[in-house]
Image 1 (tube, one colour):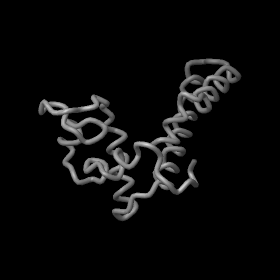
Image 2 (cartoon, rainbow, N blue to C red):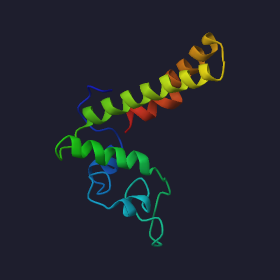
Image 3 (spheres, rainbow, N blue to C red):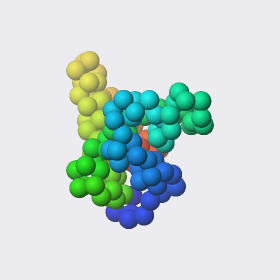
Image 4 (cartoon, rainbow, N blue to C red):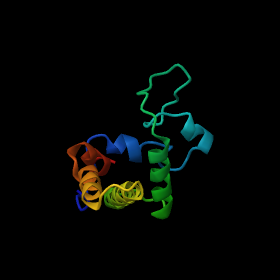
Length: 123
């Protein structure tokens, strides 16, 4: 999925056509918009999917790539972030004195479970 150079399903709307994701909106606007860039409070249509950290990560990556937004760097960033979260889960489980085998199993399930594939495949 990281090397695939085309956009999947809704990524064009979430990352490319969304002014919030391109870094063209203020922080206040990002925090008052849904995932797709629609205002949550003006009475218009909204999906009600509130994910400001994801949108801010898109804006950050957009800025890092010099205003160019391509699927491969965004997916690579998501893979790295998901890997870091999986390692963090392992460390938290070990800190709570979970035996290392159970900690590995828990972190491994978190990393590989199909419910989390959307985090990487679909931005």
